[in-house]
Length: 373
Ligand SMILES: Cc1ncc(COP(=O)(O)O)c(C=O)c1O
Image (tube, rainbow, N blue to C red; front, side, top):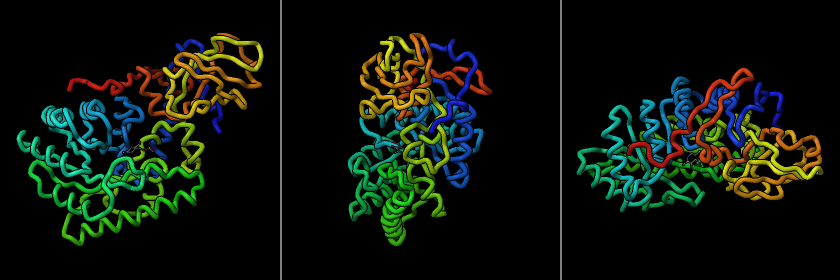
């Protein structure tokens, strides 16, 4: 599944552990492949939560990717500092984030910010606040694609909410948001059926808006499991928003091998205790690797056939594998996270590998909740 030949680095033993290594050529290949699957850089609105890193934003901008999505004000600020021209805050603005957004708009007039709405009361509060501040913010109606996380159902109330967004001072209605991240079937045929079934319902709703005389300037839709399927519909004004495809991870590699992407990020880990048998302990505890995946399924070690994670605590991972006898205390192993986004979030920086050597260190700047605003 992962060929370690593609992940060779001179001087790997010199690196601190646990720490992250980004394989730059693999990330660049993932970016190129995602752009190809989207049908162009202008059709991709990557979610920045996957990497939270300025240098990766710069790489994306250099490839002509000008639209971004984010989930925190710090991510939005980092994007604006990097001169990203169009930033969608893919969250409903509530509480202090409303004024924080107004301050972002003050500080970065060169960036066009937008946000999501799925309920009338935050819509009115946001509109009133922006109007008081002499501003108008673009808002997209967040629709529930069946994921049942956020978004309003496709019904009459949703039509009325769209009308409210179109008529509330301080708001400018900018279109629809459809995140269908629930489609994770590893069978590409089944996944396609489910994605397109949801999409037909979406189109029915969008068409009702158009028939009622509303403008739907843009649609922001999809995650890694659905974007290539929606891209093929050729729908105009569609922006596809996979995020994980930039770095990719083992979970998605197992589920979506059809995307032809490879994990670009690994954790450098070391053996810190060894029983001498098939069991050994590594330093990649859940302070170095996301713990949102089920215990026993958080990391993949290409060099440890049939490894079983038998214990995972803050600083320790106990694994059992017949290959453990090949290793001694102090040896280095590359571990691939099953969920890359929250793994990146627990590290301060990442090493960058290119041409088989470490060439740089990039700070994961937006892991902080607050930059300046
Ligand atoms: C609203 C939203 N958009 C886009 C994405 C990116 O999806 P993926 O991680 O499948 O690439 C996510 C991921 O959680 C999300 O929550």
